[in-house]
Amino acid sequence: MSHIIATFFYIGHLRPAPGTWGSLAALLVGFAIIHTTGFFGLCFAILASFSLGWWATAAQTKGKVDHDPSEIVIDEVAGQWISIFPLAIWPQQFDISILYWLLAFGAFRMFDITKPGLVGWADRQLGPLAVMLDDVIAGIMAAAVIGLVMFILS
Image (cartoon, rainbow, N blue to C red; front, top):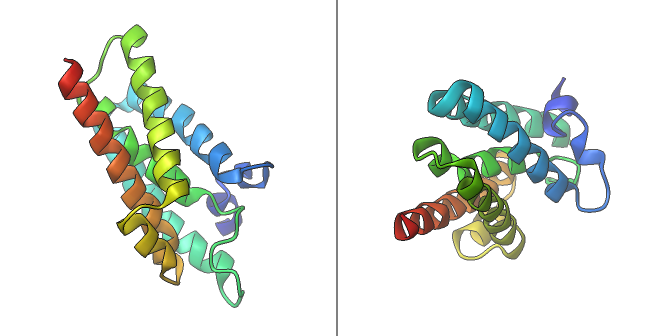
């Protein structure tokens, strides 16, 4: 079960760039979550993905040298869902919101790949919490960008 969770239903085995595939899958599932269960559904999904992701990552990396194998993408799922948080709070018409969804994807991937500031610090830490934390911080940074752009353009 921990492998299914850690790889987000085996999405983490897609190549190349499993983190990008995981983020894209999370974006699509996040869209469905927001449009079926709304703000509270997304909040629950974020908390569940973080909690279960921490557990699954610990189980999958126990006794291994690599503390953050590329097939573990549940951290990207949690971070990507955090990045779309402003879209659950402040819904837009579809023709406008699609740009925000793409921006959320791009901003999250940019912060996750380049690892500026606290994202890089968290990435350099060891253990399953650190695996989750760098993507959570990248998600928060992307959500801040989305919220600021939405505020400026409204």
